[in-house]
Image (tube, rainbow, N blue to C red; front, side, top):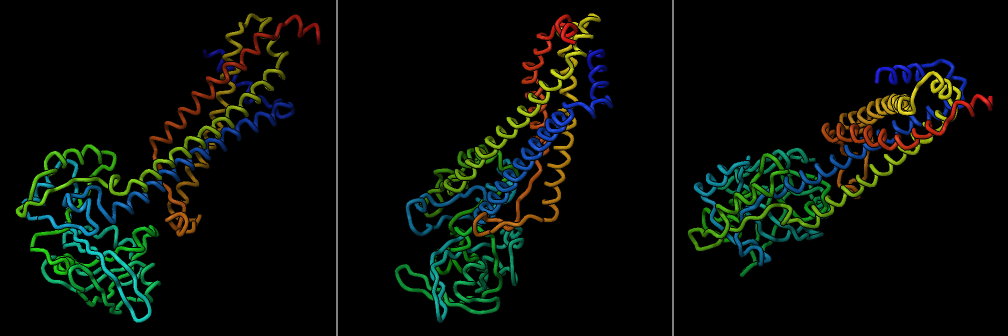
Length: 414
């Protein structure tokens, strides 16, 4: 193979190529591969980043796995279930579980002098992981989350704040309806914004004790517990393990535990995210087709323009197989240079966007305010390997044109 590669390198770097008709075809072929690979890399980075951000926002509001009362699945209001220290400890010791936190929910209505809004009050305790909520805080601070003393503080979304005309530090009345009407006055301490309208339009955060009292539940009774896992890709397996331990068991009040992961709780959201993979496959197919078309056309032009070289080489004893490998090596050098530029441009633009957020989006439409980027190095490596292998494999067919060139005919024509 050294003979073929050596000849290909000399052809690839030959200065006379600057005057050849095939030089524009070579340039187009190289940039066809570069642009195709760049678009493939950017598409993967954007889709993976977008899916990751939307998934993280959904799990930020509801955790990865929920252990709730079985009756809550068939009731408009969440039903109480005991989450004592023993149960919390047992759940936190499950393999793959990173954190466990209690929560209570109660539907109600916020009312100001000029407007009112139906909301879902979500009470959380001191063990609540505030990382997500704090990262999306736009004004003020988070309420003091506790399960012992009610602070009467709430954090509302920017969407609710605009609709009701509320600001940080203002007080608002909340009304809750069950067997009787209950009223409570809260102070707005923080305003968050996640751009997920489904959640921003309803969720109001407060402490666990406030919701427990409004619901009339006993100490230790909550709507359930949220489990955060270490690896989202192991979600199904971890959910099965938790269900095997906790599912269909009963608490001290005879209520039955039920275990569900977030993809079951929000099926439409995750089905939509799964459909985004189809877009990636379409883009990969189109860009790979572009690369194959430009490289095939370029190789054919290169072979046809070098019929004299092929005839001389055959006269000197070179076989068709050796000449095919020469031109395939030549094509490999072209593909390699194109892939180098494609990686530089694709990964460079991805890292630039990741660090600066240069390209902005309308959050009302896309749920994020900037083009999301995540660089999956393994996927990028696989795309590079796949592009190289498929392109060179497809180019084997046009390389057989070498076999159709006969030295005697070429020399007689000359």
